[in-house]
Image 1 (cartoon, one colour):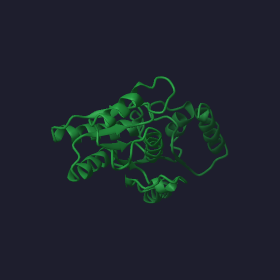
Image 2 (cartoon, rainbow, N blue to C red):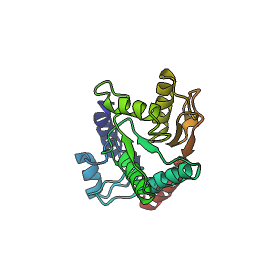
Image 3 (cartoon, rainbow, N blue to C red):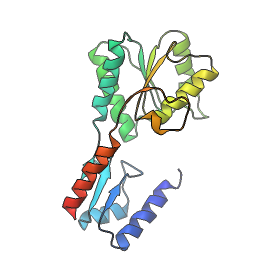
Amino acid sequence: APDSAQMEEYILQYFYQNHYDGILLFPNDFEFYSDTILQMHLKQYPFVLLDRIFQNLNCPYVACENQTGSEIAVDYLFQRGHTKIGFAAPISFQEQVTSLRHTGYMRAMSSRGLQARSYENLFQKFPQSSQSRLLNDITSGRLTALIASNSGCAVELFNSFQKHGIRVPEDVSIICFDNPNMRKSPSNFFTYIDQDSYNMGMAAGKIMRYLI
């Protein structure tokens, strides 16, 4: 949301100023951190990042092997006869987790000598060039499988394909990151790379217990 950074800052200041023992933080931004986060770090206030890493701030975190996840997805599709595999995301590839997943996809495709096809910023009203290119690549046979950067993207792809008469998985297969069954949608039947959120939370909790 547009105001998510301001809301995060408000909540962090509230916890910090009211002397909470520690914070498990899924940060709004992966690249830039607020003065409050820097202050907490310098004063050794206990916090653990979830699924994000601040490259220039040495602080505890729990994250998944996102690049490896994409390599597993490419291998899964390749073993089932797919060689025309694309990677799709509803946002820019510059976002940290999306970037890692896309890098893993590119590496896996390159190692097999396959042509990579990437589609970012999908489902945005302007511009629609990426989505148009994706639809054209499927209908022309240049693409038979897609790796969606997250489950929400997979559901959006499925709904879009239905509107354009593209069948899943007959015309194009979809595999996604994250469990799509967490979403209340009739299109939650994709194969997925599971991000073990429960055990990530357990690991973060154990780190927090050590810190406090």
